[in-house]
Image (cartoon, rainbow, N blue to C red; front, side, top):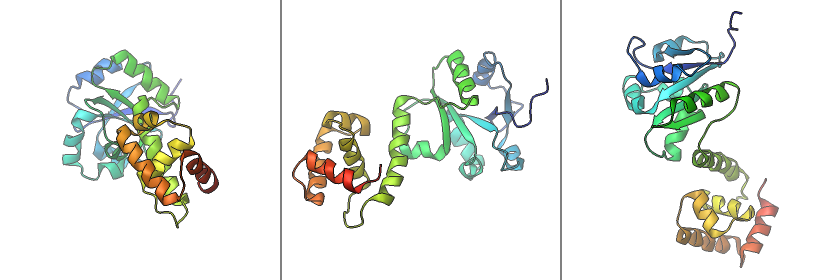
Length: 215
């Protein structure tokens, strides 16, 4: 049966489709669907309304891609993106460059496991490490929080993060782990939050959040 032109497909983004990409070739062996190659130039010619293509990006080659196409993040902003060959933990600022990030695989990941994740993404799932999912969750939640905080209270984005964690019942240690900061820093943020909200303790701060912050 001929594959529908609207079927979700994965395309490896590369500068030269004639080159040999060993990592990609190894992943292909475990795929039951085609894994095609596409160049940034070809991506520019694709109908922007056709979002069925999922882009697979080798993170080790990302800087090289940017050197040739500085506006690449603008070109792919409507596409779902999968990163592989990631050698280190990325900051939130580095993650959001990839727009609709659906999957991330660190270097050394088993090719069979990557293929399994790619199939899941084709089926509409996310395949992100827990810490990456947490970073993105806090980032996008903050966008909402900054638009829903009463204007007469000058809380920073980080203080809003801490307050949201407090609202969820997290301990100082849990807040530190979730936000990737020290417990001392958490205590410092809590001091500033209590001062700005004119409350004396966690219970009063949570009550204020429940009353003034949208869920």
